[in-house]
Image 1 (tube, one colour):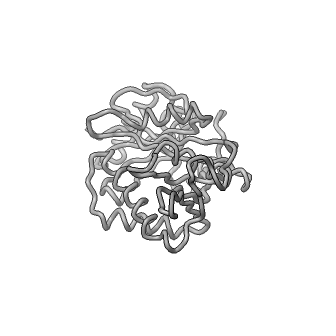
Image 2 (cartoon, helix red, strand yellow):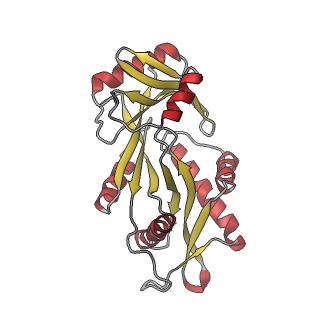
Length: 269
């Protein structure tokens, strides 16, 4: 019997699409997916029961994935928060959730910052910030993307129904950063969230202070909507160098966030 919460409708849809397979004693949802921005395809294992918590279990799924999709760039495996995998697996995306506001944000704070809904005057600035986020995410995977390609991805985010962007403004109304939120339903569990898609405060503004204020504002929005907030942290995969994402996750844990699930990556080699 599964110890995971899963939406029965999700499993039924995957069964109808011939994506629900059995690998030994494990029932899983497996299929090919493509990241259009970086031009790579993967075998995505989005659900497995029993959940893969050991290296042996994850490696068995990886072996089956490459037999089924031998030409893909790698495997993406979704696990719960407690899986600890070693090479060739590396954390790719960590999804974190928060269930309550941190006290919200005041109209006037000691930093003289005001957080307001983005208006038409902020449109191009926000578009540029989200474009930067897509480009930075690709760079963490060792891929340099064309600016116009990242911009096209940003435009898709901005067009999402229900999307809300809040902008932090400093003296004279200068925009100093944003947080962009959108409705999100986890198709595996059926859980509804308010997704914190991106928060960014560029240099030379006070990054830590303003990011905290914007995150507080996002948590307050989630509290008003009666929804937990869900965000993700991109990890460095496929390129050398320190994984800044691991430090971000640790910092979020200290501030009340909890890991919900993780996507691990293993290359095809």
